[in-house]
Every structure is written in structure tokens, then in C-alpha cells.
Amino acid sequence: MMEKTLIIIKPDAFQRGIVGSILARFEHKGLKIVGMKMLKMSPELAKEHYAHLLDKPFYPGLEKFMTSAPLLALVAEGQEAVEVVRKIVGVTNARKAEAGTIRGDFSMSTGRNAIHASDSRETAEKELPRFFKPEELFDYPLNNWESIYAEDEKE
Ligand code: UDP
Ligand code: MG
Image (cartoon, rainbow, N blue to C red):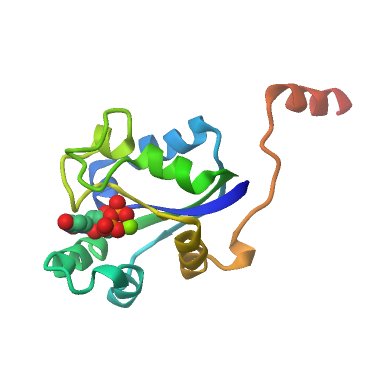
């Protein structure tokens, strides 16, 4: 089942200079990056994106954090992409996240846990249009070297 899912690389990753290392994990896995956008989250967008957490005691701190520095919003496409990406990301509390996951390898925090990913297909369908217009998504083949060489031969 081909799916698209939303990934957000959070402000702490920009501040710590680990954005490229995180992005590389998705490329290496074989997911196709079909959308990519640097932006700053407004308080309004934070309230919409984290509507399910507005009444939590940590929400004010979460909003302050998410609006403090730029984000990188990504759309990853692939078979079962939603589940695959959540597995690569690891559980919310980075101290509990498995080694080998992004949170497990790059963070020691529950709040400043480097990355967001849609938690289900339904959530992905709601989150994608929040950050990307249809014309900001790209369709292209994921090449392997054989097909690249085949194109070279024609030139
Ligand atoms: N969060 C937090 N404290 C908590 C739980 C969550 O600061 O006790 C933050 C954290 O940045 C997390 C985000 O709120 O990634 C969204 O929480 P959610 O439960 O949706 O976790 P996620 O889907 O990101 O794993
Ligand atoms: Mg969540």
C-alpha cells in the first residue's frame, strides 16, 4: 500500500546541527522524499497541529519550543510509509526510544525529541494539507544505477 506521511524535523535539530543526519535516515531507508519545506511554526499553527494536547500541562512549553526556530517539513512516500517512518522515529520519550531509532540515537528529551511523524494514515491525511499544497508535492521515479546508466547510454 503506497502512502504519504508527514515528517517535521523540529527546532532542536536545527539548533544542534543534526538536520542532515536525520534526513539521511529516510533517504537511506528507501523512502521517497516528495515534499520539503523550511518554515517557522506560528502559535496558531502549533495550536492546530497539537490540538490533541492543548489541555496538557506541557503544552505552553511545547508551543514555545516549536515556534522558537525553523522546522523542516517533509513528505515521505513509500509502501506502508506511515508505519515505517514511526518505527524509524522511535517512541515519544527519547530516553526510552530504542537505539537505532532517530529519537533513540539523537535525543535525551521527551519534549525536544528532534522529530514529528504522523501517527496513523488518518492523521497523515489531516496533517499533509496543513503543511503542503498539492502543487508543492513532486512525482518522480526513484532511480537505481542501472536505470541511470541506461539513460547515459541513450545520450
Ligand atoms: N511532548 C512533551 N511532553 C510529553 C509528551 C509530549 O513535551 O509528556 C511533546 C513532544 O515534543 C511530542 C509532542 O509533544 O513529540 C507530541 O506528543 P505526542 O504524544 O503526539 O507524541 P509523538 O506523536 O510526537 O511521539
Ligand atoms: Mg503525535
